[in-house]
Length: 582
Image 1 (cartoon, helix red, strand yellow):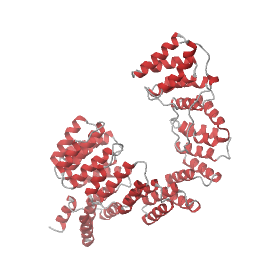
Image 2 (tube, helix red, strand yellow):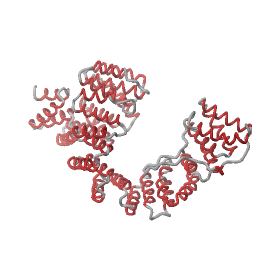
Image 3 (cartoon, rainbow, N blue to C red):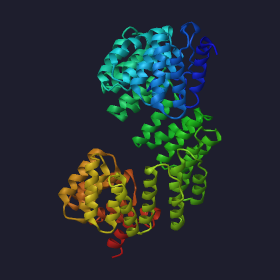
Image 4 (cartoon, rainbow, N blue to C red):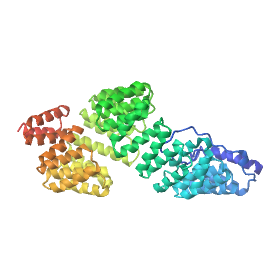
């Protein structure tokens, strides 16, 4: 073949190869924009006048063949080096793009940066090339070098400057100095004071830099220029929520009065109402969403999830089935949620049917764990454990999840020694795995091995100082089983600092106050915990504290109510036996 013809044919072959051996896309390596409106991107093309006019040399041919063969054999270092050299030699933008893609695929950022610089030099009008270069420069902490390229990207947008401004925070998302990124965004947005996206970009950058006052001020300017922009309204609610849920709720309420069809704002409003336990108003918003968007599968799913939080399982079931009938894109997630609904309602056969209908994918593994749990709830412990043993695992994390679930089934069935031994063997192979340490400690407590419990929880706290439930478990056990009450209180206080709204930690604080003789404080904590989560063990604690204060009728009502829903609960049975049936 004539060398001149070969150099023309070679880039087309390179682009075809980009889709095959290395699975590299023909797009760019730009970072994801945090909040933006997506558009279909046109295919990357290179104008023929940008192609170099040169003859193929033996060296070029060698580098090309070496790169392609190495890539097909998985020798990515060799392929990357060959293509970067080829890009520098040929100055062909298609080869420079291919070299950049291979270097990114092989996770060689320095080589990718070299190739991307060539790509921009030889094809300066290519937006994908410049976006890729900016992303690489930002990831390499070369903000000043990236700046002129960002400016050119903005200039190239022309009348579509808003689109370019919306991409700023995505381009800068990996830069560690968030204040420097904020300053750059402010400078780049300064020429566009009447463009809503300019203020929105500054607001996002300020949020990332934890400059919340600036974020709020700029998003308000955004909405002054474009009051109907729902994306900006959602972001303002997010900023307000940092200060107070109630401020965000008030803002969403007022916004919806003017923009009643703002679906995403109404969903966020409903979620916050649930968080703040304004259940009547939350249900009203659900009804409004169903009415306004009767054929929207995403709304149906969101209403179903929110209904589950309210323990309104009838409404959740109806919403999830509606989402399925409307062809919600992730059908396996909906099937998994339906399994949970039926499990909560103790309709176990139907729960098993839905869990078993979840196909391979993200929800498949958790569905298998729930399937085993339901079998155990039906009294089929051996069948449940056999099912777990047959679940295919993809990694060590899933393998350990199987062990944790198996041990929990054994504990629930009262086989405490077997659960303890199972977890102990797993811990020998994974001595620093947090969940294994925690569950092994809980299994030790059932066998009165408080030395093992304390040793493992202290190790867990050392490994993960922010593990709230490790502090809580250690504090509660010391309060319940020893006279080290002051030490117990300190651990529970630390747990509350880490998770101040957790009802189980609030319960522990109530229990240690009771053990310290502070009955008034203990009752207040326990009432708060029970109101938030009517768990049987919390009911047992609250009832006991009320009983010793002479409020026996209220205590018995709480116990009987909880026992009706949890007939086999050990804590409830023990406290009733201790005080009522003694």
